[in-house]
Length: 426
Image 1 (tube, helix red, strand yellow):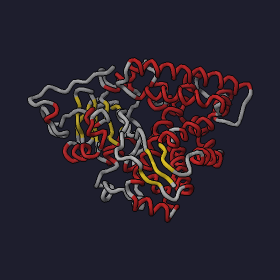
Image 2 (cartoon, helix red, strand yellow; image 1 turned 180 degrees about the vertical axis):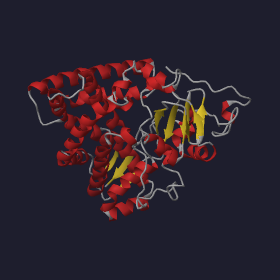
Image 3 (cartoon, rainbow, N blue to C red; image 1 turned 60 degrees about the horizontal axis):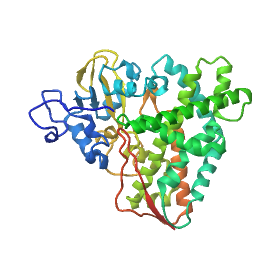
Image 4 (cartoon, rainbow, N blue to C red; image 1 turned 135 degrees about the vertical axis):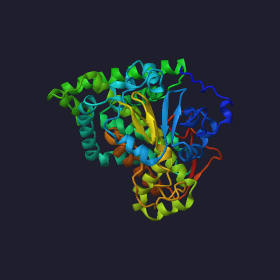
C-alpha cells in the first residue's frame, strides 16, 4: 500500500487552504486532498478545485512528487502536446506515477494508456480502427442490448439504477463487441469488477489478491478465445485483431491481451459513472430533465454537458521529457503533471456560468475524455451508451424521481462515480 506524507512546514496540513504557499513560490499542497480520499472532495470536489484554479493554477505536491494544473488552456495544451510522455517509468523516482507502475508489477506500460510512441501508435491505431468499425456496424445491436436491460427493470416502484442499469450495460455491450460467450457473462463481469481494482493505487492486500485473480482469469479467457478465433473466426472484435496479427500486424499476444482487458476495464468503470452521474444530475435539475423530455434532440448535448459538469475521470497525467515551462512555472524533465479535467471543465474563462448545469449550453469542447493522441479510445461508445440509456429511460417511464436523500460517492481516487442511485419510476 502506498503512503503519503505532507511536506514539513510551520502549520499543520489541515490548516492550509489548497493554493496557499506552504514554503515558498510556487504554491504547494497535497494532491490527495483533491481526491475521493478526502471527505469534502469526495462529496464535492469543485469548491477546492475552484480555489486551486484561482490561486495556484500550477501547484507542486512534494509528497507525491507531481504538479497539478487546473486552468482549461493549460490542461488542453498539455494533453494535446505530442512530446509529452505517458509511461510511468519515465517519471521521476518516488513519484506517485512511478509507484503506481511498481504497484501493478510493471504491467501498466503494456497498455495503450501508458505507452509512448512508436509503440503507442503501433498498438492503438489498429485497435481503434477495429473498435470504431465494430461500433458503427453494431450500433443497432448495441441499442437493442441496452433496451433489453432497461426493459427488464421494474415497470413501477423503486430500484437501484446503478446495479440494474449503469453497471450491467457497459459490461454487456463491450462483451458483445469483443465476442464473449453469453454463457460466461457472469464470470466475465466478476473478473472485470476485480480487475478494476488495479485503478486504486492504495488498495488493500486483499483487494490486490482479488485484482490479480481477476486479471489472471481475464488473460486466460482472452488467450483461449484468441486462439479459438484464429481457428474459427467470428463476427467480433477479437476475430478482427486475430486477423490483424495474421496479416502481419506488429502486435504481440501480451500487448493484445492487455489492451483487450483494458477496453473492458476502462469502459466498464467510466461509462457506468457517466450513466449514474448523468441521471443524478437530471433528477436534481428537474427543469433540465423537462427540457430533455420535451426535445429529444437535446440528448447528445445533454451527455456532453454531463461529461463537462461531472465527468467520470477527474484527472489525467503527462510526464515532461525535458525541462520546460508549464502554466507559467518552470518544471524539470521527468516531473509528472496531473491535469485536472474537473477544474478545466469549470473554467469561467471558457464556459459561461460554469457551475450551472445547462443541457442547452452553447457547444464548446470539454476535456472529459482527455485529448491528443491519448484521447479516450472508448469515447464514441460511451456517448452511444449514455444517449441510449437516457432515451430509453424517458421512453419507458413517465415519471422518474430520486428515491434517496443522500448520495454516496465512491472512494476511488481520480474518478467520480456514485455507489447507489435509488430511483422511483412509474
